[in-house]
Amino acid sequence: MKKIKIILIVVLVLFSFHLQAEKGKKELFSILGCISEYGSRFYDYPKIDVTFIEFFYPGEIEIAERFELLLQEYYKVHNKKFSVKKVIGPQGHIYFYDKWMAKRINKHYSKTKRCRIYCAYSINREYILSADNNQILEYVLSSHKRHSPQKTKSLHFANAPELAQTTAAAIEKLGGKDVYLYHCIKYGVVPSSYVVVFSSFPELEKNTGLLVNPPVFNNDWEKMDFTQ
Image (tube, rainbow, N blue to C red; front, side):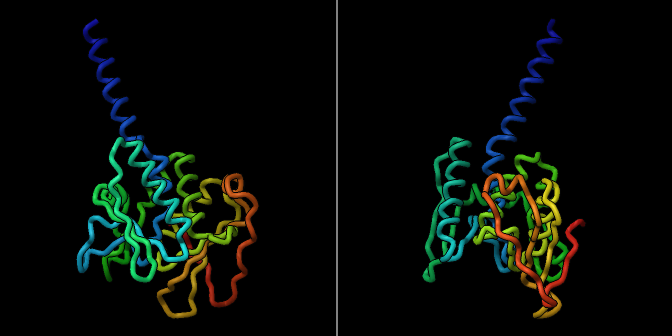
């Protein structure tokens, strides 16, 4: 009888740890989907701002407001007082800062191959693709809201090759059809613009409504592998 009690206690403790780990995951995946990784998540040089969460351009007011609501919901789920600082820059850029939240986000980023040149970080591909389909969908929905403002069958990324690759892989995993990743080769060896396209993605369109067909690419664009 005593052994059974001990086993039950151990099971309850492990289940409690599991619930704690799963707490707020839906909100977290939505938040991660909003991160643009312009250039990379952050750099080791000259100094990482450990409070930095994300920034949005002046034309992204609506998505920035949605991002703030996601942050508030995440704090609420964790029973924490909302402590994120929002700053409007002199040119209208919108910045969010908070050390606790930044740490929660940054732990899901890892160094990329570009670190041989400078310390570039990108979302941990394995973390996203090994999640359950509902969490991956939250990530893709959020990414599409930010990176496809015209509601097309495409997502546009700037200076974020690894992010584009991970997003393309996530869309394909969820059943997206004819998923391709293009990069611009017009301006030199290192491309700066990346576009993920798909012909059909029922799970996404169920949430967004009908999407416009993706753009047509000319010789300035080349297909890029995203399966690695």
